[in-house]
Image 1 (tube, rainbow over the protein chains, first blue to last red):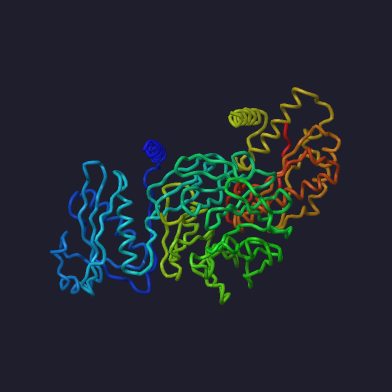
Image 2: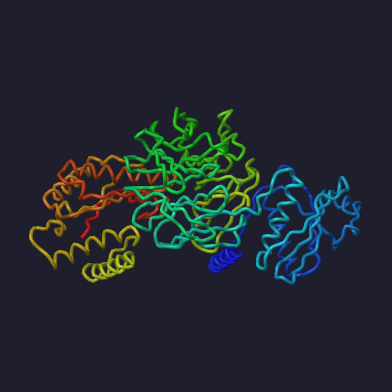
Length: 421
Length: 171
C-alpha cells in the first residue's frame, strides 16, 4: 500500500511538469470505407460528458475510418430508449450511449454501451473508470472499444507517444497521449536528445543525450523518473532498441572504430559486438519474434536497409534501386517494414513487404523522417515539416489518411509510438 | 556541480571573448565552442607563458580550426590536409596541448546515420593529427551528427557549412 502511495506521489510530480495543452490537428484524406457511427454525448455530469465526447469523436475521426452520423437532436442514455429503426434511417451502423459521473471517492466512472444498428444487438456494455483528472483516458478507452468492435482491429488511442521538442537550444523529451495531449516532460536540457525508444511494457524509455558533451545512452523509468547510463564509451553511444521480451537491447557504439551494432542487457551487462563491417551500421530494430534485426548500413557505398539474425550470421541487403534509405522499423505483424526513403532531394515515408520486396511510398515527400508503427500496425507516426517547423504526422498504413499535429511551439522531432497499455 | 562550474566558466569566457573581439554574427550554438577556445587561449596566454604560441597568430594556418566535406564523405579533403597536418605538428611540439575534434553533418540522412558519419569525420581528423605528430592522449573525438547545425537553412549554402569537423583546443 505504501509503495502504491509513493508511486502515486511520483506520478503527480511528473504530472505537475505538464506543459499546457497542445495543438492543432489537420486531417487530410479519408479511408476507403468510412463506418458511419452515432456517438451520443453521455448523460450525467455535463462537463465530463463533453470532454469524453470530444476525445471519442476526435480519435475516431483522426483514424479516417469513421464518419459521424448527425444525431438530429436525439438524446438517449439507456438501452430501453434505443430504436434501431430510427438509427438505420439515419444510416448509422454503430450507436454509442452512456452515462458518466464523478464518484464519491474522486474517481470518474463512465458506463458505456455500443450497439450494432444493422444486426440490432448490443456489442459492448462496460464501465470504464479513471482517477480525477484522467477523463481523457476514459474517452480514449471508449474510442478503442468502438474502433475494435467496428473494425475488428485493436485500437491504439490509449497508447502513448514519445518525441523530442526543440526550442532554440532547449531540448525536451516528451511523452504524450496518442493525440498529442497530456504532455509530460521526461527530460529538459540545453543539449540535444535523440532516438527515444520504448521498453516493450511501456515502463521505460531509452534515449541518447549529449548532456556530458558526447552521445551517451540512458535508460529512464517513466514511473520513478530514475535513470541510469546504459553505454558511455569513447566516441558516440546511440540508437537503443529493445528486444520484444525486454531482456536485451541493441545499441550502436564507436568505441572500436566506426558505428557498429552491439547487444547488451538493459542493466548494461553482457555487452557483445554483432556487426563487423567497418562501415556505418546503425538504427537496429528487432523483429516482433525477436529473431532478426533490421538496420541501416553504408557498407555497399550508400545508406541502405539490411537484415540479419540477432545472434549474428549472414547480413542481407533488402533495399535496392535509386536513392538511400534509413530508420527501418518492423511492422507489428512482422510481414514488412517502414523506413525513410531519400531520393531527388526529398524524404518520403516508405513501406516494403518482406515477401515481394516492393517499396511503396506512403507520402508525397518532403522532409519526412523517423517512422514508427502504431501497435496495431494501421498507422505510422513520423517527423515532418510544415510552415517552417518540425511537426508530428501520421499516415495510415494504406497511405490514404494523413494527419499533421502542430505542437504549441518549437520543433517536434524523433517521434516514436509506444506500446498499448 | 561539475556541470554548473563548466557552464559558469563558459559564460565567463564568452563574456571575455565578447569584450576582446568584435561580435560575430554566426549562430551561437555552433560557435560557442570556438569562441570559448579562443577565449581560453587568450586567458592562458595572459596568465601563463606567452612565448611562441602561434595559435594566437591570426595569419598562421593554425587559425583555421575547421575542415569541410562533400556530402556523405568522411575523408579529409586535399585542400584541408595542410591545415590538419599543421595542427598535428603543433600538437607534437606542444604535448601539453589537447584538442577535441567535433564532427558535424548536414541534415540529409537520418540523425543516427549522421551521428555515425560525424564520428567518422572526427576520427579521420584524429588519425591524420596522429600521423602528423600528435599523441593520442592529446586527442578526443566526438560527433554531433546533424544535431548542432551552424546554419539552419534547407539549402546547399547551409549544408556546406554544417559538413565539417571543428578542431577545438582545450585550456
